[in-house]
Image 1 (cartoon, protein in one colour):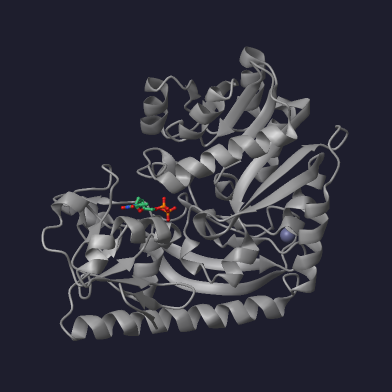
Image 2 (cartoon, protein in one colour; image 1 turned 45 degrees about the vertical axis):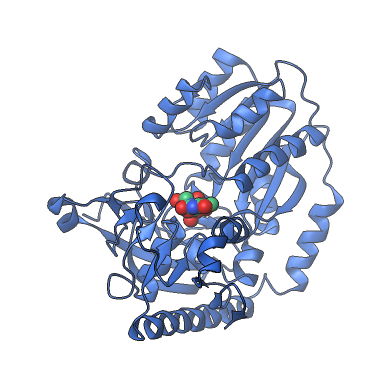
Length: 423
Ligand code: TYD
Ligand code: ZN
């Protein structure tokens, strides 16, 4: 399987340039959310891995993967469900508040969410009085959202889909895309759809991992096939301008290792470009994010972290310690596969998501166990859901009190125990 399943990137999806700098090359890695059925030997034999490489556009500084896996393969049934965590619930309320600060949402105004998953975020908007509509191609998730009373179009959002939404529901005051825009290959067609669906005074608001945080925080495990793009504000600004939109505001957020909530309005609309947008763009230039050297330095540091983590985990395992993964996150798939950690070092991976429990992690085939099924706790957990570190440390205080430790993989591998935090 290759030809029609994977597209190799040639021209930059933002600016069209073909002048690329090679940044990271992880070899072939399985799809991050392609969990396997334990007994399904055929699926195990058929498991695919795809090139995982990051390049940087020398014109607009888009960070892109080289391989685009067919979205039909990636998303038709999707085991990623929005985490049922207090951190996320709080964050979703923040998003509602931030959107409300920028667009005055009147009762009955339409809020459309792209990649609406199980409808969690839209429920928070509905509580605030908005009329809501989700769009998500994962039929299994769209069904869950419908059951919760969040109407959901089970399709990919594109210009055609936008037209039919306008015809049926009218224009949207807010179009929201949380952690979905970086997953889109044909951004031009999606932005054409956004332009058609957005009210003249409306805002298109996206939340994407911030390339500055990816590099500063060495969050290299957030690189997986679903994330086709990693954006600077400068890059998004170039992109929006090419599609008749103007960058309006940006807010840095601590979710998923560092993200930005960026809003844009029609270029001829009422919302001006805010000071924070200009400040971050100036910072990106001053801190070197527009030149090759910054990316060379990043690549070297990623290699070192990977090697250090491998050694740390292997040494602990060789000393007879029992180790397991904590949180079968998509990041975890990248981390385990590129650092060469698997059943030789880890016994299992625990995760609270029912859809993942009882299955095997992609590539490494660790059994995913519900927290209640773990039995005797291991000596160490490798924290694969490090973006929830504080919440998890609080929740697992008994494990820590009993002498257990968490191996935190990034930005530098470290071990956290009850008493000490040592490298
Ligand atoms: P998530 O943050 O959604 O990131 P990714 O995009 O990398 O998949 O993944 C977190 C995973 O960790 C998710 O599968 C749920 C799981 N999890 C736990 O098992 N226990 C917890 O306490 C939390 C907060 C998450
Ligand atoms: Zn470019």
